[in-house]
Amino acid sequence: MAGIIESPPAHQIFLKYDICVIIKFSVILGKDASCIHKDLVAVLEENAPSIQTVRKWVKAVSEGRDDMEDEPRPGRPVTACGDANISKVLHSLSDDRRKTCEEISMETSMSRTSVLRVLTNKLNNNKKFSKWVPHLLTGEQKEPRVNFSRNFLQRFQTEKNDFLGRIIKGDETWVYSWDPETKRQSAEWRDFDEPRPEKVRRKQRALKVMHMIFFDMNGVILRWPVPIGTTINAQYYKKVLQDKLRPAIRNKRPWLLESGILFHHDNAPVHTARAVTDVLAGYKWELLEHPRYSPDLAPCDFHLFPKMK
Picture (cartoon, rainbow, N blue to C red):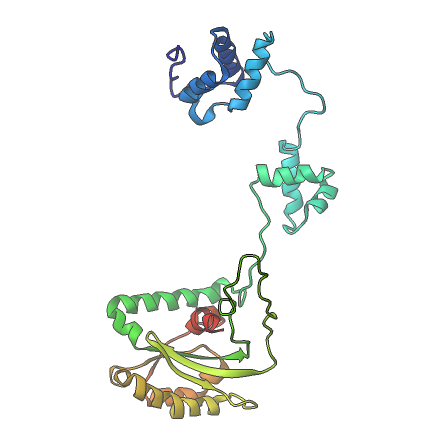
């Protein structure tokens, strides 16, 4: 009897009533719920009812039920997701998208559950938390970021790894003192019935030191801890470039002095001071442009410092 239910044309749609009639007809033929469910899955695939639903209808037909229509249900008809309520919710959100379901409920005279159902099921909305960004930039301020990135890509396509290999990046950051032992380092081999070893949670200590770090694609070239109490101004930054960074490059990357250094740092006032730019020009180091209000594009801030800390 497996050939009774044939695959319908692609345009044919089985309604719930149709499926119930098929179940009733199959029960009359003597099929059990498992066999009926297997036939329905073969035809309707993912649209077939569950085995529990088939068993429910098989039981109802076996007990003498003839009408395959759904019985009327008590209570009010479901109107929470109607067009009128959807319009109410949209209108409430038009002036403030941070409103809570309770606030929308009070404003629209709808229940909180109805508001939530409209937002999630009908409007496909979910509440998303804001993310921190360095600055809220205008379109005019974003344009230099695009040009900056495009110019870098064009140079890389032309010069390949020779371009990346000549870049030296530098910046400053505060480094706090921490307990150096990690959780993995504190692990001990113990019997299964022994309790876990205890360890005081790591706490950030009061000691912090400003570090000036310069690196390239091969690693850190110079990490200079600024003496406590020292203010980093243009003259101090210039002195570090002359007395610390240049000798470090000569010792660790001597070939860069011949091939030409591409120097990159952000637009902090210390970095853009005349005394600093004059030193870089005297060394014939090409200064790579950095867009304003864009610390997130500085490799130190998004690549090195988070991993180091």
